[in-house]
Length: 85
Image (cartoon, rainbow, N blue to C red; front, side, top):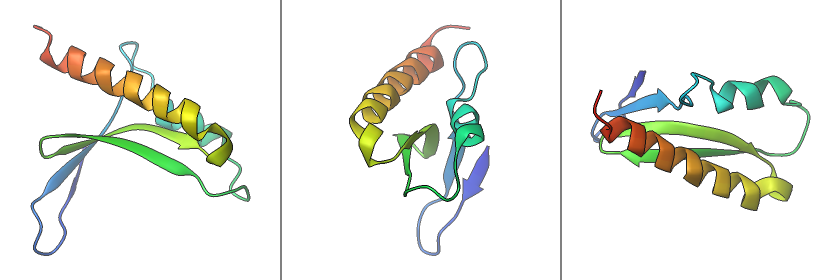
């Protein structure tokens, strides 16, 4: 987890989303990245003071699919977070 503090703003914790199997969609996506390609979008969810990195989705051509996928990841994260251990 990374803590981010902007001047005059409350502290925010940044957490990387992992699937129930321990896979990071972000790292899977990052390995496929072409650094010379188009601009990319990052998808986050806010959980109180914590920002959860859900998915570094893609470019404009995959935006709708990436948003749907990020919403699924967010729902899964919140369900697993609130589930009894």
